[in-house]
Image 1 (cartoon, helix red, strand yellow):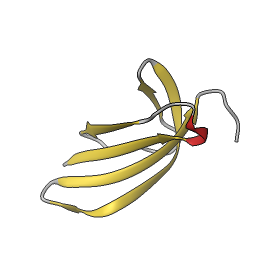
Image 2 (spheres, rainbow, N blue to C red; image 1 turned 30 degrees about the vertical axis):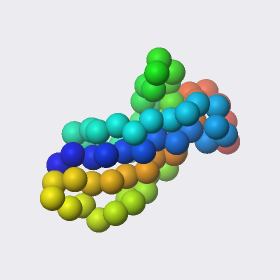
Image 3 (cartoon, rainbow, N blue to C red; image 1 turned 180 degrees about the vertical axis):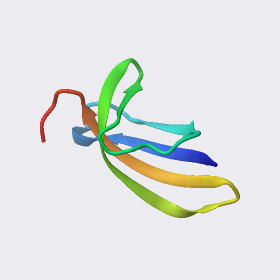
Length: 67
């Protein structure tokens, strides 16, 4: 399965990214986008999986930032 993940940074401090991954993102996981570290706060399935593709949306925040 390939996961096409749209990463959006809360507050707009970073442009985010769309990344193809072999594993789905999980809430609480840390990722690196353009050299900056972010914590995933929410993951939503955008469309049901089809033909070995899944489309997900992940909201994240800079590591160390509180809500």
